[in-house]
Image (tube, rainbow, N blue to C red; front, side):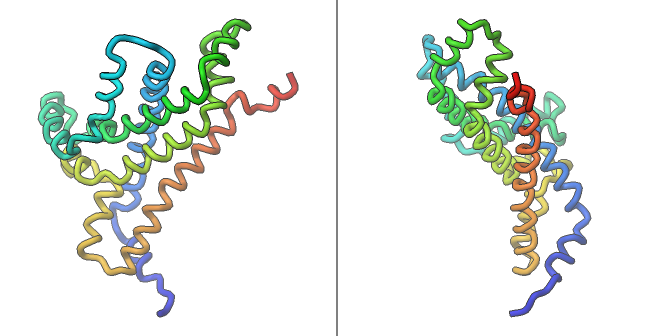
Length: 226
């Protein structure tokens, strides 16, 4: 056993590695934002409001986890061709929402259930508007659920190969599409280097998210002095 950089040399010589990494970060970032928007609104509604058909809707949100994703992608592909979204990164983003949305709704719904409605009602009675309540109460207390949602949805999006190949048509090249062909042809050394690279991408994204969270208003020094 000896140390060698042959795997990294072969990996870094891959022409599409950098562009595929940036494409994965772009698609994953958009997926995270859309999941947070949908998950926060749907999760809050399912946690706090009672309405007719709530149990049915709750079940419908989990259907993408029950039906084969490949079958859904084949059906959606026809619709995307008609809409002109096939072979585009926007279409890939939309299909990546299918396996990620159920998780974000479930995680953020449980977060709102743990939060409870009493603290939100109390802030309203003290004069807080919807935006202030969301920014200074909901976001800080939901940070564990938000972290779980961000990391999980990004990793799921990053690992999608088949549906990306179907909807992207080979024009949208993500890191998974560069990685999986190596499983058949590359040596174990190259595969190990690629696996490390593949693992570093979500870690880098998570560090970026944590850095952004540091600048949220409720963590600013002026709030401690007021």
